[in-house]
Length: 268
Image (cartoon, rainbow, N blue to C red; front, top):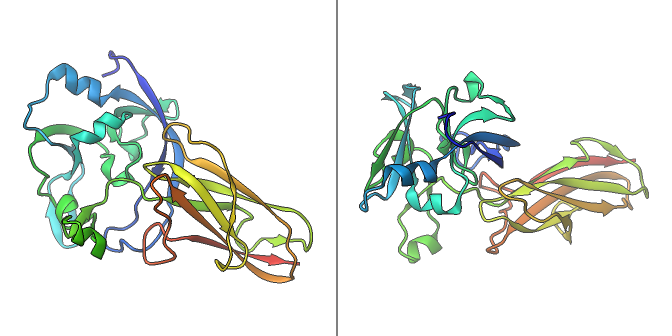
């Protein structure tokens, strides 16, 4: 693999949380740089059967999870995702050899998709005309479709693939003290598969929102946002951030892994 041209991708990388609690936000997220082989170029060189629609990826970890025994960690990926670019078989993380806990010697990396799809300890790839039948493609990591999806004829279960719009407030930190009438910068990160078009910030627990300054998207990386705030009342203030992606979808208030992030601060 290292004899082939190396491609480097900077991307946000997010765990979608426990598949047993799909509506609980965990916000285990970072922005990292991967190095490896471009998967689309590799497959084009090998040649892909016209009937293939999915790529099955096998990881060298197995065992029992949620009462079911699995020989391998198996995920699938729609081949059409490759057209958006950036999918790698990675062997480097942030310029260093891939650590064992992150999938050494090689892992799949799918920018813009939740981390569960970036299979670690990769040992096999298989092209198929249908989705894989494993525990982590059928039962787990599948969300229930809402009424609009069902009315549109979509299946009752949707695979957890593309990153939903999300944002986090980095500063002020939770339970930080800020000064009355003094300027405070509220800033953080926002991301989604389709990119974020705007971020709104509330300083009153979600009653009113203001538009934050948002930097343009740069590849698959997350986008910084900021808002200047001058507290006018003493006491507890609830800061909220709501990301809106390019297609118009916004973060829900609650009941989803990408529910609105709230930070409590004290105005003194």
